[in-house]
Image 1 (cartoon, rainbow, N blue to C red):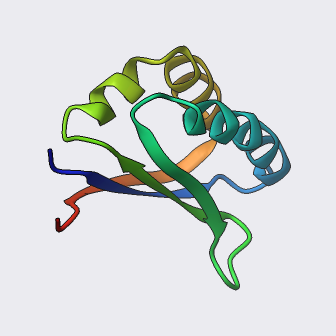
Image 2: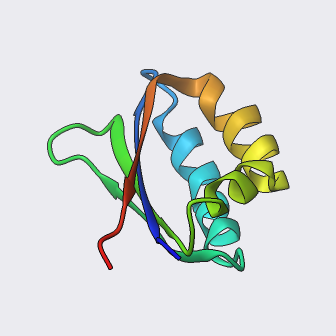
Amino acid sequence: MTQVQLIARHTITPEHEAEVFALLAGFIDDAGVEPSNIAFDSYRKTGDDRSYVLLERYVSREAPAEHRSAPHFTQVLLGQIVPLLESRTVEEYDVPE
């Protein structure tokens, strides 16, 4: 089975940094315990307090779809965090075996 690495790049709308980072902490905790999740980390961009990256590793190509149907994804990320973002991109990569 091919593992998958996701790189999600987010830029927060000005004045919403504290709110997003508070929500993000719980979201990361919930995502990290998903059965198909191998790793889930977040890092702020150096020199830019509004930008951060989510690094997500999953056991298979199908696993990100499971993640996207989880309540913490639909309710917290899509419902609360995304409306506070200026931009959002997601890149998906196969992990070499």
